[in-house]
Length: 204
Image (cartoon, rainbow, N blue to C red; front, side, top):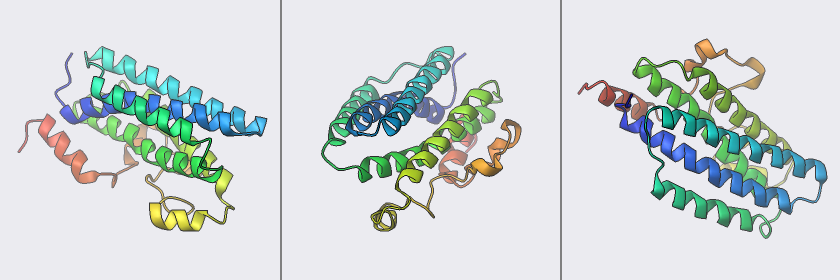
């Protein structure tokens, strides 16, 4: 079965490659940490990202979606550069930018779910939900490490992520079940999602 949804195909391809960049970044991040507990925590997050990459690939293969060579090269380079930079930019920024990245990644998986639903496909809800929630757990972990830093208010003001700014509306303390999780991320690129779904359905 081929997916008649260009935006979904592109999002899957980008997510597959971006997970590699994230994993590479966490390799450098973990290596830059002296605390063995912190190093193990970041290593676990790296392992999670490799797992997400495998999961996305399974979905892509089911629909005959090719891996994007462009995204693979682009995110390979980005991941390696970030990995190396973790050794020279101090302890705060790797945590901050990892948290900001994970905050945006949360909604990507819930948007994928919405795209699939527009095609009448719900079989991937469980794994997409699991990955979206896991990305939220990552975001919470990274924020927890820097929440008392004097630098956080300044970075939050400039980059719109921190204690009061998020790129998603998922609350782990009041987590919705899979069945109603399409309520998440309603305002995340809402116009783009609506337009992409209309295009997939052949509507003007």
